[in-house]
Length: 601
Image (tube, rainbow, N blue to C red; front, side, top):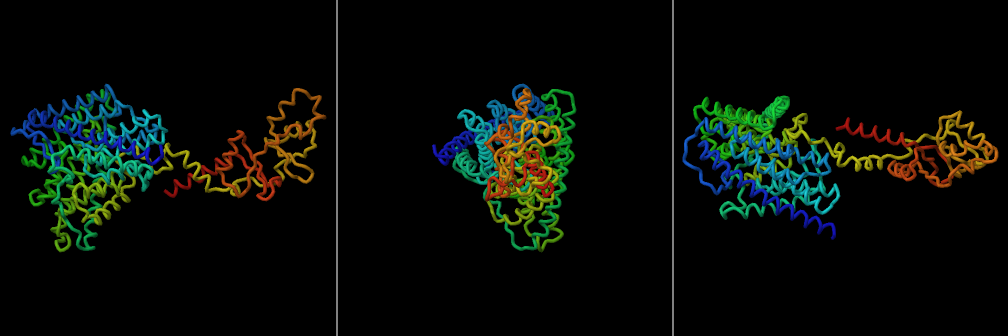
């Protein structure tokens, strides 16, 4: 099958399964929410306007004690499933997919996405503060990996399909197919790096997954942005870049606090000697106590309940009816959401960090916009626009994925009018948050990825010449005349540490070469020491390099005969010896160059 046809078919298959997986996951989450949160605890489930649910919300009153019981039970069940069947399914699944790409040849067990689907649906459906991107990313990635294994594809192909599945799942469930495709290539690295070869397969898979997912919805909800069509704000003057830069500084400080809180909580639970299911139950219970405490201390404001569950309802209000939500409420939701998310996921619960990050960034942006609107009303005329830009900037910095995040936010809100400020804030956050990342398994660049280590050895060596490394001919390089007796050669070996000896004629033209190991086969019989000479010992199969050839060519010739030294000859005369190139010097030169790359980065 031609390569283009192969990738089109495989990517389409990944897209179909990712779309179906997104439907199944979304339905399962909504079913658990309807039963456990709606009927079980009277918790009002508020989502984005286009987040269709086939289940009607029951008219019940919130019961704090039943909500705590539901949260603890959900944490226990999700943690037990992961502990019993797939430990890698706990936590935020995107990190597990990234780890499989870099360190596990793209291999994910078939059981992992199945357990991840159920465990995450339980976590989200019982009020855990988590997002949907992690589970759906791992579901799509898991199928892509398994598909490559079933067809006996190479590790490279398996990694590509894994990333394509990850992007397809995200593109479908967030109604952002273009962003999903770019997300697949960008989320793998901490620095400004892109896995370019996954973009096209991910684009095909994301398009199909998005279409499959949308066609499962009623006509009124199909191909509608997640937050609806009425989130329409404009960028009107370059002066707005100043308050947007202030917003970026707020997001950077909050992002650093969020990541530190998240991993501090993770380390705290990691040191606790309890089974995973016990930790996740305790984490969910603590998140519930924090959430309910916030709700009651905040005067029973229903917007404060966004610190539990998905929290998209508060964002929808910040976008569509910003006047009805106070600055204090937005700030409280943002900062308490950091803690409840950390308790839910870092304790072993199953869910993503994208959704909570959107809520945190959006609420911080909305609050900052309102404050700046009071201080500088002539410029900040649309404070709610800061909520949209805040979503993009916060996750771009925390996840080290600026471009896919910009596109995802614009696709989720259905407006590209804020593209310029979103790019401005996301870029600032990305640059200023270089020390922190939510995804611990990201590597800095392709150079640091075990998946590409062999590629970069070739790339770096091809950029270096033998001329820059080899030891030029001098008195220390011993050349052996073709008539030299074996007796002289044996005594010569005892007097030098040189291991390889070029054999030359009377004009010092290269004829052959022998090594100290070649001579050893003659040592048992000293009777032939005066009879045999260098011609008898040497090999005529001489591998040479010229000063103008690159080090990758040299390394290839080292490995052809498994030798450690190569004679360097003139480019216009293959018998004119210029010096010798040693394998260890070649590797040392590569390591120096690699260190230089690290220092520059």
